[in-house]
Image (cartoon, rainbow over all chains, first blue to last red; front, side):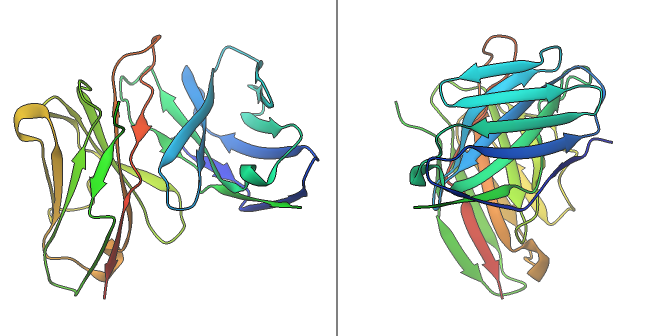
Length: 113
Length: 115
C-alpha cells in the first residue's frame, strides 16, 4: 500500500533556506503535493509535481524529486516568519483511479527571527 | 468566491453521544472528500463523493460513521455513537478537474473532542 513519511520538526533562522523532506513508497504514476497548514486554517496547496519530473520551481519554492529513492523535498528560499506552519507531503495514485490523497504526518517548520 | 466551509469549528461531546459535521464545498465542485487527522498523526482519507454518489468509501473506519451528500451540494458526516478514539480534526475538501489532476481545496477543519 501507499505510505508517506516526513520528519516531524524543523527549525531555521529567518533568511536561511529550509528543506523539508518526504519519502513515499508508491512506484506508480502519481502526483506529489506539498500543502501548508497555518494555525486555525485549512490546508493550502503550495505546489505539486508529477512523478515523471525531477524539479519544479515556483518563486521561493523548489521541489526536487528523486524517483529512484522515492524522495521528495521542498526547499523554501529566504525563509520568513510567515512561513512558520505545518507542511504536509501527499501523493495521489493516478493508475488506481482513486482521487484520495495519502498524506504524511506533517513537518512543523519554526522560523526564528 | 467562497472557499470550503465547515461547521462547527469545534465540538466537544461525551462518549456515546452523536455529532454531525457539515461541509459546504466550493460552488460547482462535484467532488467532495472527507479526511481526518487523529492526535497529530497523518491526515487520513475517509471518503469521496462525486455529486451525491459515494465514489470511494474505503477509508471509513467503521459503521459508526455515516456520510451523506443529498442533492450533491453540502455534505454531513455523522458519528454515532462517538468513541474516544474519534477525537481529531476532520477536514473536508472539494475539487473539479484541472489540468489532468484534481486539485483539492480544503476547509479549515472541525476539531472534535470526545471525552
